[in-house]
Image (tube, rainbow, N blue to C red; front, side):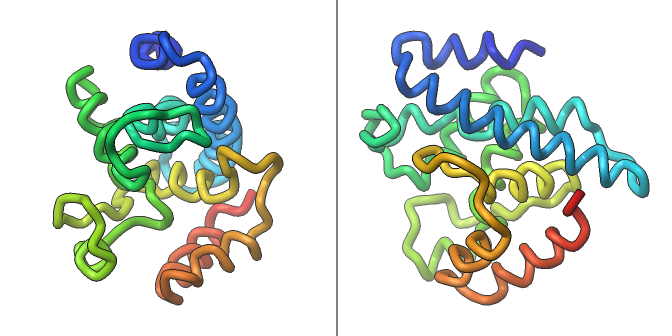
Length: 179
């Protein structure tokens, strides 16, 4: 599969957003592959899929109203996961689509969506597979707007704004995934 061709298909007319997407996704993919390689010592991991999914996990951001990312769509940023999932399902990539849908933070439960009144379908959008968890974990360390890798403490602090259950999930992942 050609991830670059898919990105070109959707981002061809917006070079600035494409550049932001590709820089962020490359960082996430590099860490995700490193984590997958580490985990593969004890569990079976589809490393090729992890890399592809990490490169495509934010493909839906173009259709959000996020000017700081050069995106001028009509949806709130929180919708980028479900938008990306729709795009990838249309491309015949249902497994990659699930990564898009489930990578927000450490995942969104139906309760999260209802309590925060998020403009998302009321269904569980938490990572289920090992590969989905690895991509979501790697994504937590990189921002599209700030350079460099976040520390685990900064990730914890960011997640704590929502609730300690999110921090607990991250801590379990971090213990398992830290290369």
